[in-house]
Length: 252
Length: 296
Image (cartoon, rainbow over all chains, first blue to last red; front, top):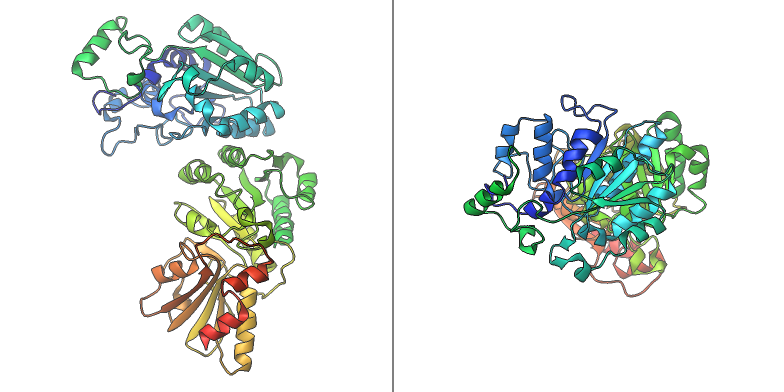
């Protein structure tokens, strides 16, 4: 998909591939044939630039035909290169960072007010935690006891122009979030067992929103993309695509 | 206008269980009655307008018609992208309410001068913009908004403006408050209508009978909507807003070129002094004497 239209953000998409696989297999209560099922869990991709892999997950899950993935980013396609709510299964369009978590707070608050049991999962990048609007929401959620809200940080340690630790260090991230009164867990974001164990047991503390800090590797699974800043932007050419696909396990 | 807004919002909330009020820690002594009567539909998010707007959008996406309320530029420019992306793009029923239109809070300084808001918000798709002149227009605006939840902006003055007229029909076209005989008319949006009415009364005593229109409905508009103004040779547009994106520009866009539009607006310069609304209006020729000179 990304190769065909010279798109970017393959690195940040691969870093959350395992998280998405577990979310859409074992965690999210959704009905692909009924995308607006009222009792569905709401998944919000706040790092909207990494939408290609979410479209792929939705198609694999049956929200729309996988053949449509061929149109990603092409003229006239609804599969916009930043996530779009025009696509079945997508709750919210993003692309500007720092919008997903505040919007998710509004949804989680609505669920509480209306006595509904569905949950809100928001996928954030590490770099976007530079945005002040996220910290407004991080203050807000525990104040209103939004334990139906789960923030997942794809902590791949690389942002647009460099390492997070060099640009604007988030460390100690877990301590910061705990100080803001969130329930926090840190896991290996590529270990399906750890991801499943964490996300199938939320909320971890009644009355508190949950934040899963998933330590990940940008470009995970392709040796020449892993931990490599250029792959925030670069498009794999035909040779690179073949080399990358050859590294993936059979049948994936 | 502020008091009329809250009274009407409460009246609507009694009938409509979807109405929700989100404030960003402003509105002391005016939000409390709503908060006490509708505790489950009131939220103070703290001093955080970006969060307020996105949370409003999130609530709206789950069935509420959310009103966000704050002062001057805080609920609009501070969180403009949240309005553009979260509210307008998703076509969610969020009504942004700002008090302090124009120089209503003139002595509080430039941060509190809301003089670019209409022009900026007019560029957003799906947006409805209402800019009432007095308490009566404010009530009708709230009634219309409650009946038609949509991405919208309600631009209010402050508390204590007098009632200026009883003409209704904000959604049908500009309201003709004074019907004159001359081929020119004064057209206003917002509380500057009071100045226009005083000017027209003095002009009438001098034998010049001009019509006065109030135009609380600023978006969406069309040539058809503005048709009552097309019969004039000349319009004098009065607005407490910069010319860019404002009322005069709107009139020139949608009216036939045969209609001459004179603009009385706020200069696009930083206002470096404070003062009462009346004082600041005089600095921009938005006063009775200047208008009379322009019309005669």
